[in-house]
Length: 275
Image (cartoon, rainbow, N blue to C red; front, side):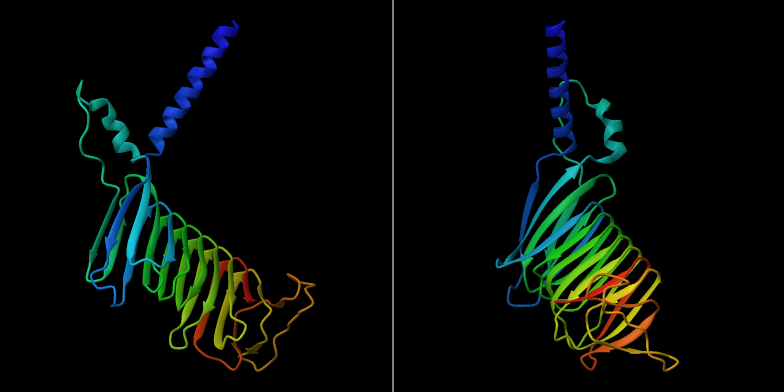
């Protein structure tokens, strides 16, 4: 009885290990040099199924590591079609990466989920799209456009204008320097927005949440269509300690005004923090 039990455990462990190996193949790596390192660079990513992590580093190339997590129902249907004694030479395409005219294009497909980690030079323009997956960006100086349909967006230690939109997901960003010439925007349909900005920021703010609150510890001069003064509570009684509270769509300025920064969510709160 004991021997049978131990054999069952061993069989289960081996089966679990093999299933895990089948579900998560080893990561693949692609290194792409830019045509002219002295010219402006762009990274364009379009991954429908999966998450993306982008990190700025001191190197000159784009280094892409990705791993597949299954190839969808089509691959499962084909597994029984392998001819006896044969092994497959080609592999299902899961990610294409190319470079042309200083633009690196990374594109996934719909037939399997993958996670991609990409290292690029810190000074670069980003254009990132995901359909079902999160986006994480760290240490990038340059314009960023991030669109995650169903996923969270995280931006850390960024410098430059940021346009970030998620339909179903929260947005958390920490910006070290804001462009004086271009606007930034953070928007979500179902998710909170929390952005940390430099203390000496000069900006004009547009803030709106239909089902949530707006908090800040900046000294915001709030405009009102009627000319009335918006109520503020910096005691923390109605929100996080040390943060003022306003409960309606607002326009305002910080340190006399500057480039426009927009914060809009339908379901969720907005928190604008001083770094």
